[in-house]
Image (cartoon, rainbow, N blue to C red; front, top):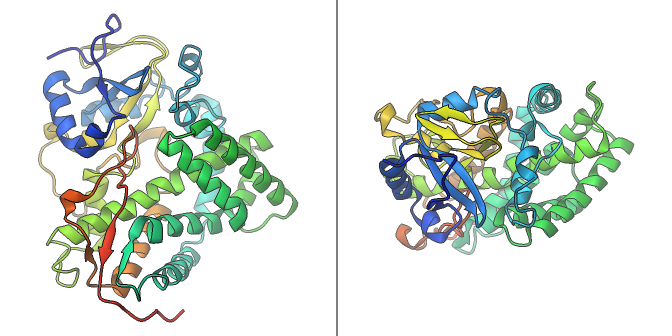
Length: 403
C-alpha cells in the first residue's frame, strides 16, 4: 500500500474532476482504499493536488481537531493557481467555513442565531405552496425532468423566502452559483453572485424584515457589508445545489428500490428513511470540509504536508468497511452534515425542505417512475458534488392540484 500523501513526492494522483470518477465514485473509493488506505493523493482540478480522507474514523478525528486541521486556506492560496476554475469553491472568505479560532466562532454565532430563528411551520407551508405551483406546471403532461422542473426551482425559491431575497436578485444569485459549481466561467459566476448579494444587503439594511439576512445584519457581532456578502455566499452555496441534489438523489432511490417503491404505493420505508440512506450512500456534497494543516502532521502513518488541502470524503468515509455494515434506518452517524466545529447549522431546515418537497411530489404523483433505465442516467463531473445531469420521469397525466 502506498503512502496517502507524503511530503516528498509528486507521484500519480487520482483525479476527482473527470467524468469517469463521477460515473462510479464508489468503485473509485474501493480502489483508493485498496491502493492507499484512508488517505489518498488526489487532484481536485488540474494543478490542484489535495489529500482525500476516505477512512471514517480518520475523518471524524480530523473534523474534531481544528487546532491541527484549521479551515483557513490563506497560506495555501499564496502558491495555489489563482486562475483555477475550482478556486471560487476553495478560496478564503470572511465566513465560518473558511476561518478558524475566534473569527470562526464570531461568524458561526451569527449564522446559528439567524438560522435557528427560522419558523419551521411557516417553512413547511412555503414548501407546500411552491411545490404545488411547480407540480401544476407539468402534472397534465405525464412527464417531467425533475431537476429543472422541480428540485432546483423549489430549493431556490424556498431559500429566497427564508433569506427575504426578491426573485430578481435571487435569479442572478442562482445563475452565479451554478457557474461556480459547474466550474464553467466560475470567476464570472463569482462576480455575478457577489454583485447580486451587494444589492440584497443594501436592500435589507434599508428595509429589514423577519428573515435570515435581516437577522444576520442585526446580530451583535456587527457584520460589515463585506462580511455579509461572504455569509450569504455560504448560505446560498449550501442551500441550493446540495439541497437540490439531496431531493433528486433521494427520489432516485425511492423510484428504483422496492423497499421504498413498489411503484411508491407499497414501499415499507418512509421518505425520512430514504433521506438518511442517501446521506450515507450518495450525500449531495460527496467531498468537501476542506482543512489546511499549519505544519506537517503525521496521521495514520502518513505525513500530511503543511498548507496543503485535506478534503473529507463524506461519501467514502460513510461507506468505510472498517466501521462495519450498518443499517441506515434511524441511523444518523453519517458525515453528510459534517461533525465538529464546522458541522452544518441548518440540518433541521434542510431535512424539512427535502422531506416536504418529496412528499408533496409523491402525494400528487404516486405512480412516478423513471423515464429511462437507471443505468442510462448520467452524473455531473466535479470533485465536490454527487449530482445527476437530469432525472426524467413519467406518470399518468393528472389534473392540477388545488392551490
